[in-house]
Image (cartoon, rainbow, N blue to C red; front, side):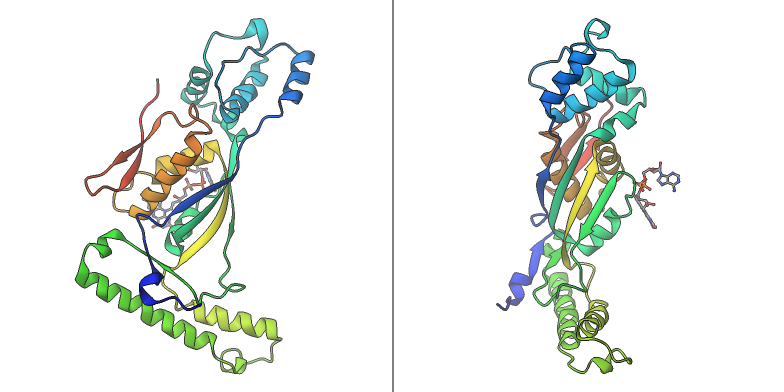
Length: 268
Ligand SMILES: Cc1cc2nc3c(=O)[nH]c(=O)nc-3n(C[C@H](O)[C@H](O)[C@H](O)COP(=O)(O)OP(=O)(O)OC[C@H]3O[C@@H](n4cnc5c(N)ncnc54)[C@H](O)[C@@H]3O)c2cc1C
């Protein structure tokens, strides 16, 4: 089904969506078996699996179970690990998230985060962008004149993409005789070079708590990068319910224009 021109544009403030498809999940039967071998772990109540997992990993380092436990709560235990720089323990808690409604410009920045992250992204060689949508920055949306120019440029680029995709003579793009599959790849590869960085994409991201904390600290509060801030805030909204202690020092604040920013506050 054809999209009309209006349907092609998604608001950079509203479009990013995060789906948490996997999260930390403790096998308590195994933990109990471990306790029988070692000592009973005196746990707080109401602590999530993600926060407990990190505490468990930290306690194994010092075998501080039972009589050897300090009276710290889980939140205090995790804050102490972070303050002492014993952050490798945070790597045991990890999530898999699907991000949609984000631009290729955004994911290009995201995938620069190498340590503790894994990615699988929608291909522009195996998937056609005939029904592509585009992420519109809210600064553009607030300026009607600029918005008209911007949308026109995007639609023009997409029209040119469609013309190349429709090119039936493969040899018009690739000189050698190619299989049907490789000919399609050649056309899509040539055609995608015309697509704007605003093109919507989807990406699966697996990341551990340490890596996510680093990403949020580095990227969450860059005031001029709205999409990065919006996605950072959505990410934090999703993961902090699973791990309130691990992300206790990060807050979502609202800027004067109503868009979110993620700031790290020192924990004590
Ligand atoms: C404001 C801003 C502007 C930027 N501008 C540009 C730009 O103009 N051009 C550009 O190319 N990139 C730019 N970047 C991207 C930036 O350089 C990083 O590639 C990106 O932010 C990922 O950060 P990272 O390397 O800390 O993350 P990760 O790759 O996840 O690494 C995490 C941490 O692991 C350690 N580490 C990782 N790899 C190594 C290594 N090989 N050796 C030693 N230690 C390592 C470091 O401590 C690092 O902080 C910019 C980033 C920001 C936030």
